[in-house]
Amino acid sequence: KVSEALTAGDLTKRVNVTKDDEIGAISHSLNHVADSMQLLINNLEQQVEERTKALHQANRSLEENTLQLELLLNSTAEAIYGIDLHGKCTFCNRSTLQIIGFHSIDDVLGRNMHELIHHSKADGTPLTIEECKIFHSMHQGVGIESEDEFFWKADGTSFNVSYHSFPQIREG
Image (cartoon, rainbow, N blue to C red; front, side, top):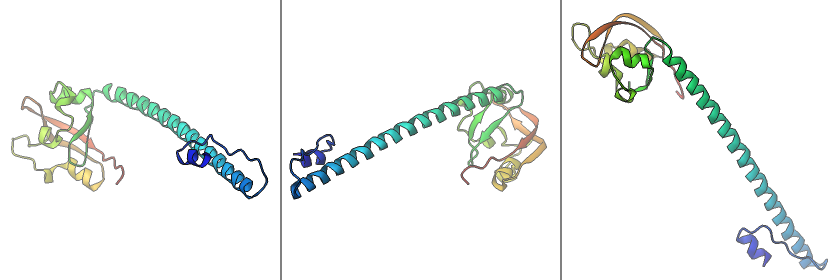
């Protein structure tokens, strides 16, 4: 019965050892195996609980840091936005939205920023992705500065910009 209980996952059952013979030795061994398994499972449960707590604390800390960063980004008058390797917007501050004339972050997030705001030169001729200093910066992994380019607003008007582009490389 104890062997069946252990096989079914019930580690609370033990063999009642009544004799000090071969069956008694086997019974002691079976009880020892059950004790060891119970100890391992209890330790594993405790480790999972401790790691879960640590993960929750790390997540809270990350959330707090994210809120602080968001407050900092939104408190500046400068437009700050990020793009992924495909040029899609991953974040932007309020000033970005105000300067380029969009009302909601949803109008910008996930969209290709080159196509959205940096697609043309001042005279309206296309600025190809190959000519884009931001994409050169990103793909070469070096920061750049520019003072002679134009961005385009949501209403179709352009404005002269001075910008800095600094790639942040994560996980290659």
